[in-house]
Image (tube, rainbow, N blue to C red; front, side, top):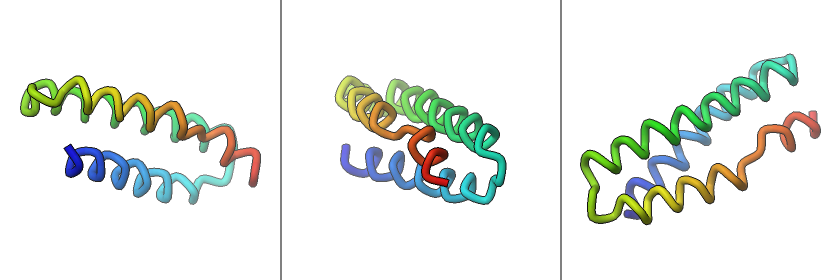
Length: 78
């Protein structure tokens, strides 16, 4: 459980750091939202297929992480 949560969080962090190179705030927000939900779908599908006993817990953690990561907050700071 810890491994998939850490992998999910590190993947999002890496992709958000790549997105920081985008100069236009609206493109950055679009990129961030797209990446965030694409990773959610990919990791949830992985959990459904390979981690059936902990799928519910993994999905719950993915949702919580996605709720608290808001690209709009980052775009407003720039």
